[in-house]
Image (cartoon, rainbow, N blue to C red; front, side):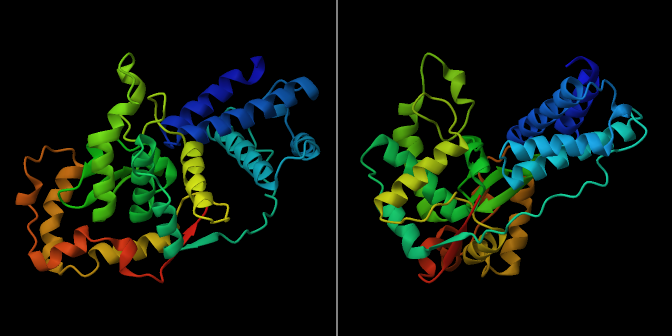
Length: 321
C-alpha cells in the first residue's frame, strides 16, 4: 500500500493488542481500511493522511453505496475509518480527523425471531444420537440452549474449561473477558457423552494439533466455525418443521432467566461457599476435588444440575445474530 502502510500497521497492532478484538472483527476492520486507503491513494491520488478531507471520505462512501453494500456494512466502514483517523490524531500521525463529522446511516431495526421452549425441544428431538455427528450436534444445541453463550464462545470452548463438578463452564467472551456460566444436567450429559464416544472420531491422528484443543470439531478434525454451527442448528430446525431463519444466540434477558432457573433459589450461604472455588477457577489454580469446596445438601442439588429447559414449558427464547 506504500504511503499508508506504516500508519495502518500501527493501528492494526493497537486494536489487536489494546482492544482485544476477536479475530473476525480484526480482519473485518483490516479489510475495510485497506480498501479505503487503496481508494484514497489510487483513485484520488492522495499519499498522506493530512491530505484527506471529509469530501474525499464522502466520495469513498458514495463508491460503497454504488456497490450495493448493506447499510450495516457501510456503517461499519464509517466506524473503521473514523476510529483509524482518531488513532492517527492521538498518535500525532495527523492533525485532524476528517471523518469526525460523518454520521452513521440509520439501520432498520429487525425484530428477532423467537423460539418457544417446545420448538427448542423439537429441534433437540430431531437429532439422531446414534450417529457420531448427531452426538456432537446434540451436545452443541443442548449447550447453546442451557448456557446462553454466544456461538463464537461455543466454538472457542476447550475441554479444560468444563467444571461440571459445580455445574459451570468457563467462557472467554468479547475482549478476552472471562465469566462462568451455569449449565444444567442434560447439557452436561450430552457433552460428556460426546467426549467419551464421538470426539475422538473427529480427531485427525496424523495432525493432532489441528484441533487446537477445541471441544467441538468438524469432520476434518479442526475447530467448528460459526457458520458450521448455524448450518447444524438450521438443519435440525428444518427437520423438526420449524421454518424460522435464525442464528443461535440468546440475548442477555433470556440468559438471565436461565441462570435464575439454575441458581436463583440457592441460599446466600451456599453462594458464599461457592466463591472460593470460583475464584480458584478464574485464577487457573489447580483444584484437586472441587466438591470439597462446594457441598450442597441433596435438597438443593437439583437447582444446580437440573434441566432448565424443562422447568418452564412456556418460556420463550430469542435467537439472533
